[in-house]
Image (cartoon, rainbow, N blue to C red; front, side, top):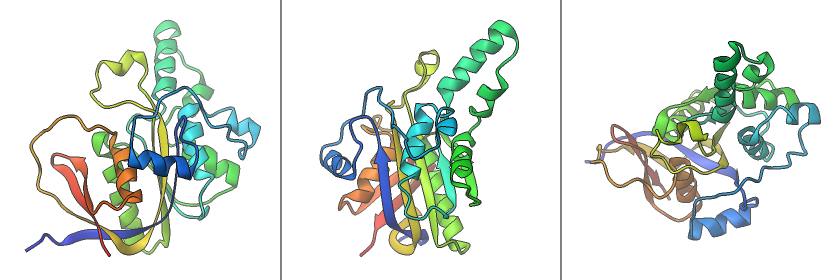
Length: 241
């Protein structure tokens, strides 16, 4: 007998941004032949007022670029990033080591919920915002949190998944494929996709794509199932008719 479903949802809208992949059509071509995005480009982010736009580094600009493509700007946000603004954090740590103090303004936009906060200020939003970091299982944590909000009565939840390459200071400590990207998933109640329990598998070779991009590829193609997360933090995501 199959394991009971944990929860379900439907995908009502998605958007993504990475250097060289700035349109929906480009991402659909990428899904057919995926490669790791690379490059130093950042979104222009002209939709955001300049005073706020200047406070966002590239990770924030990418996340904000996809948030501005929302079809439900009033929906709750689940902002997910394994490392967040680590480039900015590394700069603050260097300042602290040299001078014993850090810039309050720099610190204010280095915290994990700063990007979503900039968006709410710019859009005068009052929606529920949560920020998550759960290692390799960060995309899974975002899905589970969003599904819980949907079961609690929300009509739509926006999940933002974003990362960028680690600063040189930390790169040797990570085996994860580093690349810049931001993904927006607008999820609604439904059973188009169902999260089910998955048996923990044996450790295998490192995945070809970061978990968030592997998730996006699954959602926008015709694949029937995928594993989200790894080890004991893994669930099976199945597409239902």
